[in-house]
Image 1 (tube, one colour):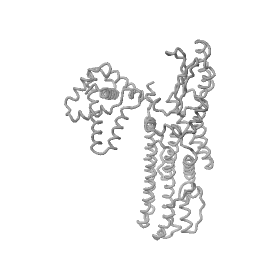
Image 2 (tube, helix red, strand yellow):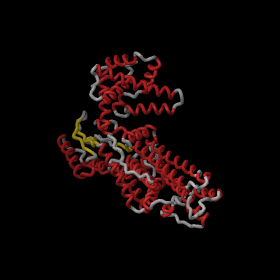
Image 3 (cartoon, helix red, strand yellow):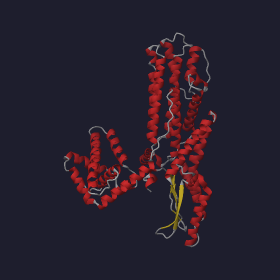
Image 4 (cartoon, one colour):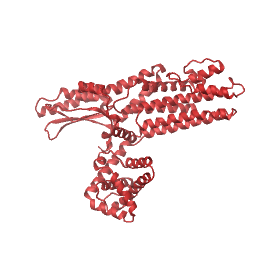
Length: 533
């Protein structure tokens, strides 16, 4: 249980639930259907339950449940068996046995990571012309049909209503925040931020090396590349914003824009510094303006990547260039990098123009974008000559969640069983504080989450402090300063209060980090329940 602390509540769900018919002798213990769980798991689970709902006595129904478990393990085999476990028979107040499908979240995340990585590797091996069909197959077979199949399996009429409806829960702020919190706990957002920084460094390397190569040209001509660099920076920043808003379609759009802008930058440098076309190494201001005008021509054709270079070369020098991958090679890009850029561009275009917005949040979709974006960053690094072999940093997600759950449960026990000691320790700590510091703590008490929120794992220590910090940045002075001081006083008091509780023997002194975490949750719970003021 501790390994998945809060995970079940945060993980995205399909907008449909399972329910047991009243006349059924065996009850379903699984109501929520989680996104991206492979369809065969749910299909076999629901199908076998529908075939064996139970018509006999209690013992016969228990035998049916055991048969369902055996049949599931037999039919699904080794490929999916690690992702789920079937629990039952379990009896509660109704007197009816029920069967429950439990998801092993760590195995499911590993499976989705493998599936996304394997899909990107498949794209790298096919020709550029087949990229679109492969991404359509991924979305249709692995993501969309997974959902539609469940709807048709559960209730055909309800399926049609949901598929034709344009109102879904995924636009609600609460759903966005939960999904963003899930991505943050998995380390996905941190990894995207790391990739963005690598992309910025690679572009900076291209900029500096090209500036040295074109040192002999006029400064007012060369400085025009700053406009292209500014547009490229905006494209990259918009990728980060789209990830924060968990809008994958917009993230692909800005990645495609960044590819277009990068090619315009390379076009600018290569045409400006091509000594064979301009033996003197210099051009007039008017010739440069004409060339830049074509570099920034706004065409809507999806295959327009190299049109700026083609137009400028044809108009200025009478050279006609067709729009194909070879144009990137004319810009100094190696053939393998040219093909990679074209493939990545095709993926982004396919998602933007051919894939409808999903009525749910898909972790598989996010992971696919992460691997495509990583592929793009590594390609730009190779072009810039800064390619590095790096692996994604492994986050001990499950060990951390287990630690958090133990700390919360220990804090709940302390507040319940040692309320008087908690109050005494708090009074000893705040005795030397002035009234203003106490007001900051009262504000923290007003903002503190409920016990249920903490026990379900919906808000962790770091997330609470980050929320206060984010709110302080968004609000103007002096409100931002007040929130910042409230967070600071809360953390400081929890440290000294933890020392007092360790001295009293209420908190174990073995692990200092764990003791500090227990003290923080104890203070947060005590403030929220109003026993300290």
